[in-house]
Length: 352
Ligand SMILES: NC(=O)c1ccc[n+]([C@@H]2O[C@H](COP(=O)([O-])OP(=O)(O)OC[C@H]3O[C@@H](n4cnc5c(N)ncnc54)[C@H](OP(=O)(O)O)[C@@H]3O)[C@@H](O)[C@H]2O)c1
Figure 1 (cartoon, rainbow, N blue to C red):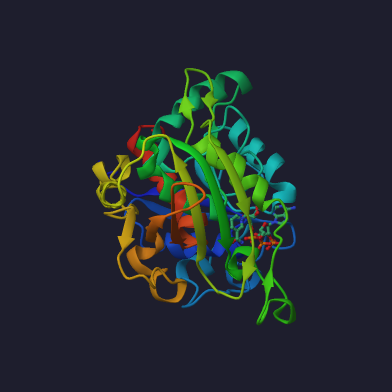
Figure 2 (figure 1 turned 90 degrees about the vertical axis):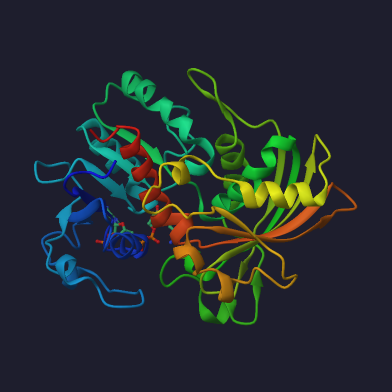
């Protein structure tokens, strides 16, 4: 399945926080090679190293440092496959322009996620939602396409719920403890977040509720039928650097035992594992038996940041069960998610 030579890719918004995560995540990728970076006209024309204040651990990759930043406009020089991490205020037009011009846009922005003909992908859960792409192209008259990945807290919830879907998900109540890196750079002011919890993240609760239903929904020929479960989210920002932790209470239609649920979590494998996609964790959802785990500081970097960790499964006196889950918000919730989406698309022949 490996491509005979590396596939050139571009990063729209490559100078920003998520853009830098793309650059870092792709630096040794076996299939993809970043050859093009786009940003605003403040950066276009400069070398990547001059336009970018590198905020991540480790050094800026030298080959990328020497690339000249381009305008985010489709041109002959832009590769066909484009990852997008552009500012949400401009992502709609930029991504559409690239898709219209024949590019495959794999976006991390929220802008197109809930459009009915745009796949909102978690490859372990809904690889079949890619069947929306031909419909999207017909409807919009595009040669290219747009596929998206979820919001950084939604991906943690949906990955944790995916193994439990077989028991019939009826109701979900989720409370998040979200890392400050999810707010970009410089994020939340230190005076606001140190020793504090901020019980509001604009738009986040609605995104978690709606995106979860779409991701876990069924492809029905020409649309996605949302999962008919009630989902209620409470979203909080906490003084953690990386890693969104969520606590979840769930009501199931069937009533499995606790060991059955833990077994379902640990046995869960899907298309990315079957196809051995390069960024796929070998076990996507990992149950930790230590009652004091998962913890963001101790667990978030494991499995290259691509797995979701679940723990403390126990009975819930209000719904049926409750548990905790953790995922890496800038890896599994952003750049890593989009790269895995592109790997899935390649494995489906959509990049040919
Ligand atoms: N931060 C996160 O953890 C996170 C997680 C999930 C999703 N997201 C989403 O990812 C996207 C990027 O977030 P971020 O935190 O990386 O933001 P950011 O650091 O502010 O970066 C924004 C990027 O967009 C570019 N840009 C701004 N205005 C532009 C314009 N008019 N034309 C073309 N490019 C323009 C910027 O280029 P310049 O450098 O030239 O200004 C920069 O490359 C957003 O849609 C956000 O909602 C972020």
